[in-house]
Image: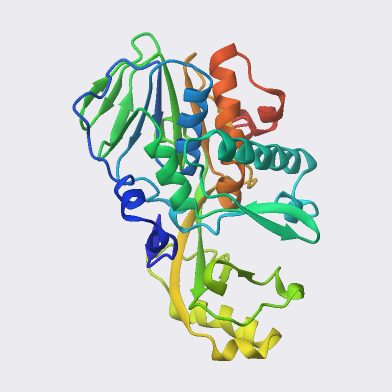
Length: 331
């Protein structure tokens, strides 16, 4: 969930904005080869990967509008190298593979996704407007719908998915829902984080402060997100954003003359070990889940989607998703 006025949607064109809420088309297939549930960045990237893998008819469903969850409020920074000293080597390797998968998608998806280069300590990384990427991915998919809530899935023998718009009978299902579906009983929580973006400025942020803030479009300064442990209230707290900006002013006094234009907060789904789940749902041969991506959902979305498409196509999990199995959370 994202609350407050996030920066990213305001940067979209009218056409891109319209792609976020297409509604329910009349020709929506009810027996697709792949049904993807969840219209955040991971769900959109998974649906795109399934289309590019030639897995047949792919349908993407979202209960709200595309990008309504944490994806719509994330920073959009694709920086695997920033995680080298803080995350497990196998997870960093997965992030690096995902950055390459993003570059591949940028080159192969019609119109591209708006991927931008970003320097990190002399290493070329990338960033994007996550809502623009979601809009362009959704706009290039053959079958998408918003305003459909998935309520339940029957036992594997029948394979029916019950929704607020009737029943679907897909060959394969992927739940890319941020928080795990209740049927999984996987432990998870949401961690609130505040973000802010300044008004345009001609001032140049010193290179040595790039771990504290980033300069983006029009010279704007991007900061966030915080880790507001225990704060589950769906509100933006001005005092948190003000504290963030004071930290920047202390490090860079010219920032006191820059106006902060956007303040918002998003709730990032997280499992206890802060690693995502990318796995097949126990008891179902044709149902997959990918949840709890925490602060790396945008970064690892492209590789997550591609890995799930490979698994659906071959029946076997790619080696690099094995550390993200669901069983580790239920032992």
